[in-house]
Each structure stands twice: as structure tokens, then as C-alpha cells.
Image 1 (cartoon, rainbow, N blue to C red):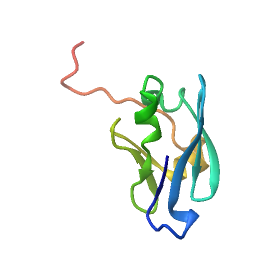
Image 2 (image 1 turned 90 degrees about the horizontal axis):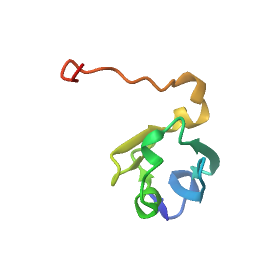
Image 3 (image 1 turned 180 degrees about the vertical axis):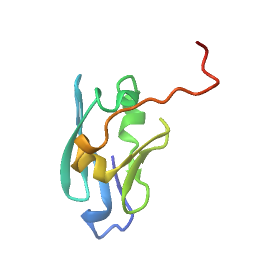
Length: 94
């Protein structure tokens, strides 16, 4: 599925190119990125229809609205700058 902010420009679009057991390949603004489930575990058990429902969320981010997952495009370009860190909430059970 491809979503365009402007139907005449590939630079404002995102699409899923491939899904496999390790992650998914995305085309975002004319560039291809592999998104590993190790880096974005919320996509691992997603239904295919939900994983394909990806869209631009402004000029600098993409989102999967069915999964409540958002990624900055910069994190796709430079994943080493965005370590996966989970912060504990004071409401979490010990």
C-alpha cells in the first residue's frame, strides 16, 4: 500500500516493499530502508493488513495508525542514533 501526501511526488510517500520473518523493507520519500523487528518489535506480530497500512505523518515521520506506531524518518536513516530504550513507568508492577 502506498500513501501520498501529494499524488505527484514520490518524495512525500511511503510504501511497504517486502515483509519477512526478520522485518520489513520500506520505501520512504524515494529511499529504501529495512526495519528490523529487533529495532521495532511492535511490528513483529502485526497483521499483514495493519503492517501495510503505513502513511506519512507530516514531512519527517511515518506512522502505522492501526498499530499506534510512529517512526521519525531520521531514525531510519541513522538507527544507531536511536537506541531502543524502554522507560519504566511508576505505575508498572514490580
